[in-house]
Each structure stands twice: as C-alpha cells, then as structure tokens.
Length: 547
Image (tube, rainbow, N blue to C red; front, side):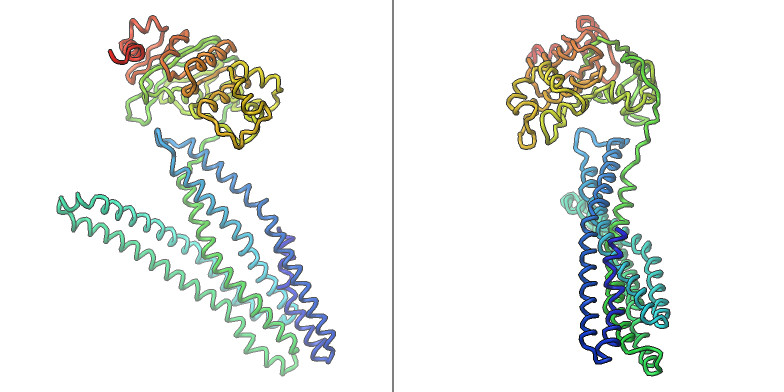
C-alpha cells in the first residue's frame, strides 16, 4: 500500500516542477518543443498516478475484509457470551451490530485508506515538490498548513463526541415520541397531555442543543480548513511577484508554486477535512458503540485433558440471576460410558440450560461439572471439542457438498466413514436424493427434518464420545427418531437426550425429570410410581383428553 501510495502521489510531487521546466527551459526560452515535452512528461506522470490509484483499490480487500471478519467474529463471540441474552427470540441487536455497525467500520476504513490516504499523499507530495521548486516559499507555506492540520486533528475528538451526542439524542427523541404517540389514548384518558408535552419538548430541546453544538464545531472546522487552504495561496500571491522582480525566483518557479497550491494542496486539504469529518466520525462512533455493546468473552484457560468420558455432577445449582429462583437446584448425577439419559419436563423449565451447564457454556452458581475427572472449565478447549458434541434443535447446514457438511468435525474422514455414518442414522435415501456425497447443497432447500438428519450423521461421523441431543430429532418422524437414537446408543459413550417426545424416556435407561422445584433421577418405572409430575406428563402423552 505504501509503494502504491508513492506512485499515486507522483503527479502531486512532479506537477509544479515540470510546469516550471516547461516555462523556463521551453516556452520562455523560445523552445516550444522542449516545453511541450515537459508537459508530455507531466501527462505520463499523471498516468502513473492513475495506475497507483488502481493498485490501491486492488489491495484494499486484502486489508479491509480480514478486519471485517475479525469484527464479525468479535461480535458473535460477544453475543454468545452475553450474560443476559434474549430468550426464545432472535437477537435482533446482535444482527444489527453485524449488518450495520460492522459495515460502517468496514466502509469507513476503506474510505480512509482510499480517499483520506490519497489526500494525505497528495498534500505531502505537493509540499515536497514545492520545496524543490521554491524552498524559500515552501517554508512560508508549510507553517499555516501544518498548523491547520494540527488544529483539525485536535478538533476531531470533540466532533466525535458531539456526533455521538446527536445520535443518542435522536434515538431518545424517537423513543419518547413513539411512546407518546402509541399511548395517545391513554394520555388523553388520564388527562396527561401536559406531562407528555413537557417530556417530548424536553427531549426535542436536548436534540436541538446537540445539533447546534455539532453545527458550531463544524463551522469551526470549516474555518480552520479554509485558513489552511487559502492562507498559503494568498502568501504566495503576495510574496512571489517581488521575488521574481528581484531575480530570486524565475517566472516558471512562481507558476509551478501556484500549480502546487491551487491544483494539489488546497483541494487535497479541503477533501481531507471533508472526508475525515464524516468518515472518521462515523468510524469512531461505530467502534465506540461496538465496544459498548459487545462484551469480550474471557479466554478459556483450561489446559487439562480428561481421562475418559464419564460426566460427574455434584451440587449443581443455577439461576439466571443472583436473586432468581434456581431452575437447577442441588443436582447430583453420574453418567458412565454406555448410559443413555433422557431429560424431560415442561417447555421452558431449563432443559436446554442444563445442556449448557454440562458442556461448560454457562458457569453454575454453585456445584461443579466434571468430564473425565476434570472440571469442565479446566478442560483443554481442543480436547473438549473432540470429546463432547452438543447438537441443537436448529441444524447448521451450509452451502457446499454433502461430503463437506458431513466432514465438518472430521475433515480427514474417508468416504467410507462418512457413508457408514449416513447408513447408521438411516439417511441413505436423503443423501441419494441430494446426489450422493458430491451433491451440492447450495441450491437445495432442505426441510427441517432433513437438515436434522444430516446433522446427526455429521456428529456420528465425528470423534465425540459424549453426545447431547437438545431436541435434535424434534422434526423427524417417530420412526426416524427411534432409529437415530438407537444408532447413537449402539455407538457407545454417553448419550443425553433432551426429550421432544416423552417416548424418548421409554428408550433411556435413566430419566431426569425437571419441574422447576427439584430434579428427580431414576428409570421410567420408578419415576412413574414416585414422581407425580412425571406421571402427569406420561398421562398427558398417552391420553391427552383424560389429562
């Protein structure tokens, strides 16, 4: 980028010098061909500058796109580690941060690298060229330019703060106005028109004050830029004629100096100020907003490897806040290889939260979860990823071949291994319809059940020995669900099923009942006798009319 910038700034550096030579060595000396030659060289330099600009655009993606990817990664990690995420609803604010704030940063950074950088290069090239043509004038010109740029840089933080204030004031006014207008009948019924008017008037007044403050700062910015752009030109027009008359400067040097100032320096300064005052402000405000609403998750510091896949839970208690009623209270549980646990309970009771606790995605309020004898938060992340697979209800299927989707967790898997996994979960017909392992999923619209079946085959082909299915078969028909669960049971290891249908409890050798007050553990027959909640669930499932 620096090399391309030097090439792009060549016209700004050579323009005045070539004009000076064209006048002094060519036209003023009666050698029109020589003068035209220097102007032709000026045209070639301008062409080289255009090539430099084109190369800058080609390099832009190599800088901006990785930065955008890193920001998206940071936002997603922040959303996944949000201490109070929206429940049972999309995270609209997280989507907005990815689609709006990140794109603002991307576009603004691109604008700085193309426009502001180019103007800085032009300004530097013009000043450097001016020193080669008329060094005595250059020092006179450089002082107001440097002062102007320094003052403008000092003003940017204030402009950013005022721009942020304007943005927040606009949001506040919209929120107040929306509340008043949507509740206008209630306002009229309560006789609260005066209160509503005062509230809205106060918000509008604050918005007006923020806008006026921003306008004042912008006016000051315009004055600073104007002084920095016009003062050098004015100084040259005052001083240069006397220097030409005194013989201390040629006419060509005077004309070249004016070319530098009027053709390069002044437009570059004005463009730099306009770009920086819009692009930089948007960039600063967007980055500040991302920093405020994107919590940085703590890095996992686990460095221990578990010995086996046994899950041990002791005194596990969790609630969504310090004072909230726990949804898991004092749970003790041991799952050995070969165990098949079904977790049942009403919707919203905390079954999915339990899976997050077992996998270390959520820290418990009290108690501990051990995998292979190691606390789950101390397990080496790479070892945890190999050992445990949490399969959610919504299956992630991406554009690509069936093979690429199935081998997501095992990139080195052979076709024979992938085919065996497909056969194990009885997805052969689906894969055949998709065109086999080479079938392209880019244009195929899969049903939710078909996506779940591919997701199950993907996990089956992976190395995980602890499989947690969080309603991962909810869109399969009952027969396909039974076949898939039998496949994972026969595969060995630990299987935990968050039951979508109560029939899952009949296939498991252990059942965990969650009812919001306590958790009961046993087999189907024992719980049917000892747990009224479980008996009610079974009754509602077998005879919904009687229930």
